[in-house]
Length: 112
Image 1 (cartoon, rainbow, N blue to C red):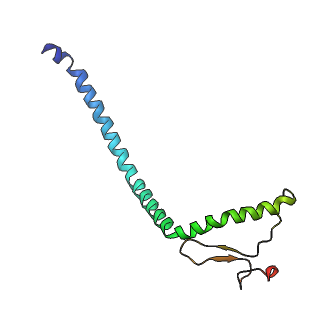
Image 2 (image 1 turned 180 degrees about the vertical axis):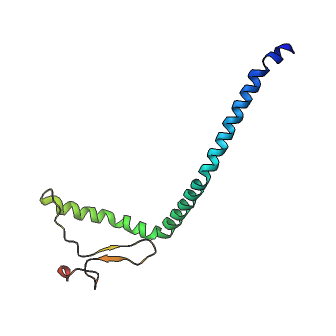
Image 3 (image 1 turned 90 degrees about the vertical axis):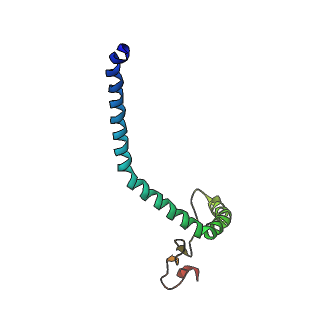
């Protein structure tokens, strides 16, 4: 009993240190929880967007080899790209495309 009593200060000191670490960890988790919750919500939104846009993404990936081939052929004349873009549309998944170029059609005047 005497040996246990002599070591009790170290034991209870260690318990106090553990409690301090647990308190700090609890406070840290409390501080991080709102941002982690917001990040998880954003990841869910991204997942929903990707799921809705899977057909568009698949179509774009299917056309990609053709586009790369056209760029490679065009660049065979030198280290520059000889391409005139007749139309360029940007579209967010589920939205109507925004066409860059002629305001009254899908193509610029040079392509008509």
